[in-house]
Length: 231
Image (cartoon, rainbow, N blue to C red; front, side, top):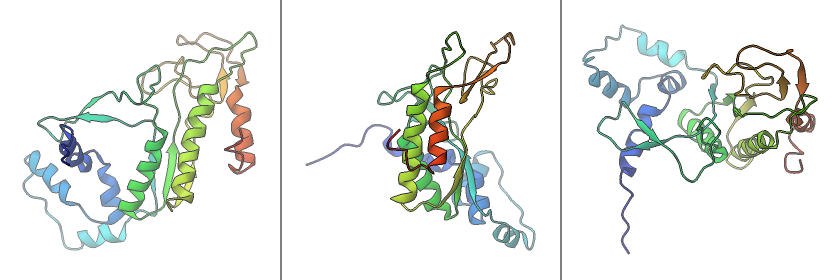
């Protein structure tokens, strides 16, 4: 039985190093990896001068843990330049209104990849979804879609810890309260557990009202995630 790998499969795998956060390797392992030298060569940097003791400084200054943000996964398209990787949509995943793929299993994969590669504890410092929330006359939002997003991501984080053995120090969600989106400059792109009465032009009372996800997350935190499968 023969099998043909999809077009671009090997290319996509080969670009992984260049898409990986380079600082994870230098800071987490204490040396410049092979692919860094290829990046330098690509940009006509033919000579990197290391003074005496520089390599020791890298080794001695390794990070105590690795922190990262996770919002989505991306797919790549095969091309001619590994250093300028293009993307394409993933037809197997749902997307937010802003075209960000919702991929909770991807979080588990990334946790395993970083931990296996660096062998340092990890800390998830940002995770969340931007959504268009519809508030009722009392500014209350029934954001079941946000609850689903968080439940699925937290479950995959728990599986990475409890099943795969990844050492994870903690998790913080972006963001506890609605705020202006850094990536688009919009207030309508809402992330929080708490609804803020303000529109894209700054109009509104600024009244803050807990959403349905607020009580859900409160119960998860109070149970130390023991109620994750129940709620």
